[in-house]
Length: 133
Image (cartoon, rainbow, N blue to C red; front, side):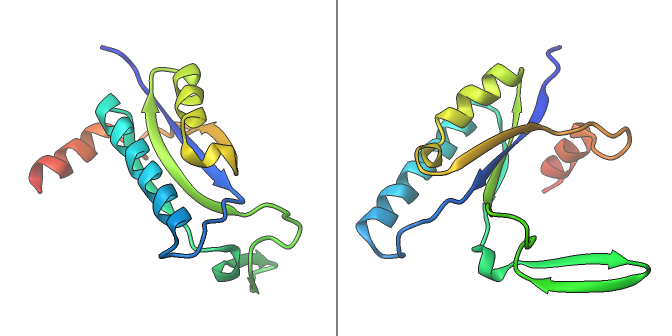
C-alpha cells in the first residue's frame, strides 16, 4: 500500500478582480478546473479562499492576558489568501501540482508538508465520516 503525505499549498498575496468582472470569472473558472483536475488525480482533500487581510484578527496571549489586534501580524508584508490541502506521493508531485495552480502566476505559492501527530489525524476516521454521510 502506498503511503501518501499531506501537503498544504498556501497562497499568499493573491488579489482577485472585483466580483462580476470578466477577469474574476476567468480566474474562478481556472480555479474550478484546477480543483477538478486535483479531484480526478485523487489528491484533493480540501481548499478554502480566505477573506482579505482587512478581515483578519490576530490573538496573542502574553502573561496570561489576551491581546487582540485587527489585521494580520503587524510585521508581515504578505497575507495568506487561501489554501489547498493535497495528499500526494511525494514532494515532487506536490510541487508539480502547486505550479499548476492558476494563482501561481500572480501570487506566492508555498508548499509545506503537514506534520503527522499520532492520534491527531487518522485518514480512516475521515473515511468512516464520509461513508456515514
